[in-house]
Length: 169
Image (cartoon, rainbow, N blue to C red; front, side, top):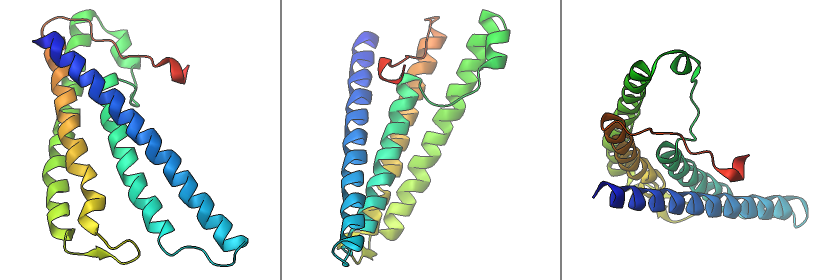
């Protein structure tokens, strides 16, 4: 069961990274079009800025969730590396508990933000403002799930290593 969960969450994290990468590329194309329109055509599209901002919210939050699962998020490990294995395991569980708590907070308050802003329309896009913020509760749930998975692995005594993605080396 646990092995299957790890396969599913690893696949989900990889999918999140691919979606985030696509969002980054799409945002770059949109901003490029906006610059071209402004300086070459003397008429930039009215929708480009809001579209780029909305995409950025989505791809940053989805990539952050994947970062929790894969362990490539930013953290300082100097103290963690200076202590013994039991203390290290305890520190990692506390770290994951804090991250899971942040994910739960993102889910709760991000969901509230989505509900409160759903009726507001982004004029240049014609989309609900809440749609732009929907990535908050979605990534919050994923962050909490991925942190819980890491805590369970630590509690069972597994050596939970942060995965070094060869694309970043």
